[in-house]
Image (cartoon, rainbow, N blue to C red):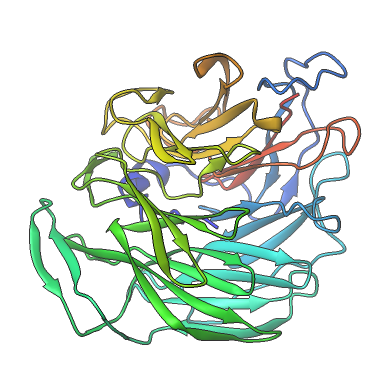
Length: 441
């Protein structure tokens, strides 16, 4: 449900690819106790207990996505999207250590010619959607499949052009406005995928090489038992450039993030245009509200929502900080002038790739890609407080300049000690591709 790494992380590749990969197949590790918390302590305040940094070796680089579905028959299955070779791995998290599931097959392999997997949305035990994109053409595809049997129902190629009902804006590599685009237009670089009811929504970044950006948009498809069909409400233009993360809300609306145009600056990104978030009605395609997020480059994944959906948090793709918005009324609580600082308040310093909401909304777990680390912020106090403890997912013996990467991550649903024991926060690393298993209670 999130914007995938191969496109935004090109600027980090030089460091990542300098690290030799150890291991060629999927392997597991048993938990390694570290700073174990008190037994029975289930306070909503975030903390780190036991940590296994390589609980699952994924056998390849840049795993794309990770998710657990909070449904009775799915909440004990961890779905991990692999990029090389492209597949969706189903992992059983009920046993000691992480084991490949014997009940769910995930998606064994991608059909040929569909590019690189980017975002996964598992709707239920029989319906899942994998978004992929061709790095050469920028065109995408959706694989509609059964995550239990691995049967592919259909494959939708996102190659058809739209007829624009209103012109789309453009900016160049310096953030200067170009002439608007009218008439026929083929969206490129699909970024994220989400499901609301029986409707599939896909965001498109519309980045043209490294020269300019076309205004972002989302497209709509209707879901049938074994097929997808374009909806008459064919698309909606977003309020900014580089449409990325999609966040479904319980009231049937959707948050659509526009990261904004950014320029690669060494190992970081410089924002060229403001970020934004739209509240979208996916039934009508109408944007209900829009919030300007200034020059903060909100990151590519879904917002971390408090359980009551009053507040939402997202990391920055340019700096070491987190943004906070209030949803009703839609307003900016912590932005460019007063962010929640994780590693740095300055732009062009870091990439907070993902933010995971803690249990009961008591805190958040931001993940710094450049620092290879998972942090914890306490939300129970009057002001968000960064805790002194963190989890370093760097790999021992690698050069200091190597970026292992931290994130994305997912928190296991349920109540610790009642619904499960053991780790509950699972975090991907990129190079090598592994899963870290962390206990947060």
